[in-house]
Structures are given as C-alpha cells and as structure tokens.
Amino acid sequence: MSDLPSADLFERLRAMRLPPGTYAVFGSGPLAAHGLINEIGDLDVIVRETTWKRVERLGTIVMHGDDPVVELDNGLSFGRSWAYGDVDIERLIENAEMIDGLPFVRLDAVAEYKRIAGRPKDVRHIELMESAGLA
Image (cartoon, rainbow, N blue to C red; front, side, top):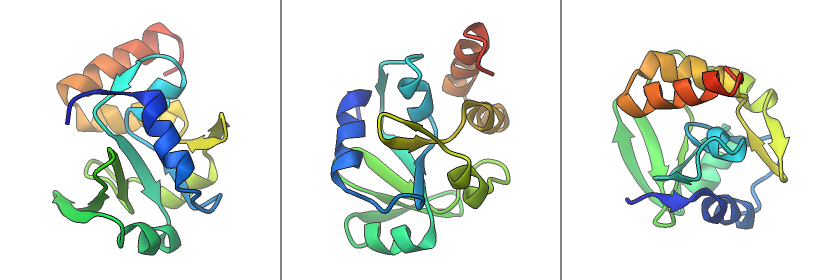
C-alpha cells in the first residue's frame, strides 16, 4: 500500500466508533499524531480481546510472523500483539495518550519498540523522535 495522509487514516479509525479503552494507535501512527511525519503506509492499532472479536469479522486475518493481524481494505491493521519484542498490549492501551479524540501509544514505548524492530524506517523514526526531544 502506498503512503496515505495520516489524517485520512485517523478519520477512518474514528468512524469505526470502537469502544474507548479497548484500543490504541501504535507503530508510525503516534509519530504522525505528533506531527513528526505526514504520511504512513497504514495505521497499526493494538486491541484488547473484545475489540479483536469485533474487527476480525471486518477484514482479512494475515500472519505477521507468529502474530495474527486483521487487515482492512481501508488501510487499518489490528493486532492483539506485535511482531517485535515483548509488547504488553494491556499496559500500552491503558497508558495511551488522547490526541484529537483517539488513543495513541506513548512515544517512549513506540521508540522502545522501534529500537527492537530496527528496520530502516524505524531507525529514521527514532532519529526524528530524538531530534524533536520526544524519545
């Protein structure tokens, strides 16, 4: 999928009206919410079990390593875990920060995840966060 304006993806997620406290935007989404990047390939969302049951009926389940992820054709991806490191989904959702009505995983946790993942885009994202004093 090509990069999409993050605002479009945020609106798509908002339109789903998921129950508060059951999900948070992860991956590159928090960087976009903080204005560090403008476009992202998709929007990664971590979810609790109740919301997983809701979204799994809406899209295609694909495996990212050992982790099932629901991908919707509108650029949203949902997971109960994530491929790199030992991610505590419950803690990340509970500690999410609200930005424009959506919950986002805090940048310190995103930076920690991206350091473990170590992909080229993650290295660039860490540099952006560090240069902005946010990681």
